[in-house]
Length: 295
Ligand code: PLP
Image (cartoon, rainbow, N blue to C red; front, top):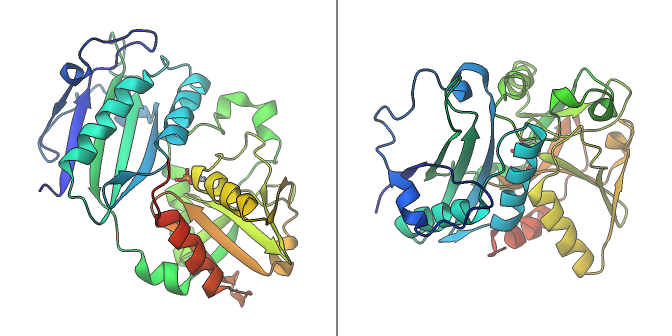
């Protein structure tokens, strides 16, 4: 069984019922050249992506990830992706991977080559990092100013804030800054004083019996893991809320989690150098749920 699977995909229009979807994708060697030099994904980060987990042979939350890919493409004026084609690509990759272990499967849709005729698309699956230690022991985080107000998306839609674009250089810079400050991860806060998200995760807080997460204003990415966890919490009788969360509430929370598709839920143990309340048992319960097959 391979350790990676890479498929180059010829995007078919969303409205087209392609007779033979298998013929629109081909497996390539991940370490051999596959993209053209003029690719706008590499030159300008001009494209969108999704990363989903494959756990013990099951692609997690495929529907919500594909819906978000469609939404990101819409925000970026990219051609609407054909979700049946992407689903076929995911199925093909999953069938080629070993049926156990955790894998990160990335979907990329770029504007293609400058002045070129069509977008470029590919899928790449590789073994996920081992997150056992951080799931068990949590992470130290720092708050970092995102540099704009929490309503920036409505005032400046060209920032493409609600889209999962390939332009992640600032998110990666925030992670490096967190490490420089002796932490593992970051929580972005808006310039007008609200909690936003991590550079690669959503933030969930618990105060007493109530779980809250920043309202999906368009300035943050609406996380599939957070939504799945909130559905699970609601289904098991717990109270959940989407709201604007002032930064001060990070200091009064009974627990803070960073959640994302591949790392799953990790608890925050330290924030800006100070210890914060940490719930190891509930984090374990979240990760048990998140590892279960979810569609
Ligand atoms: N917010 C940002 C900026 C992200 O990059 C991610 C995931 O990479 C998330 C939130 C969490 O999204 P998901 O749970 O769908 O992985």
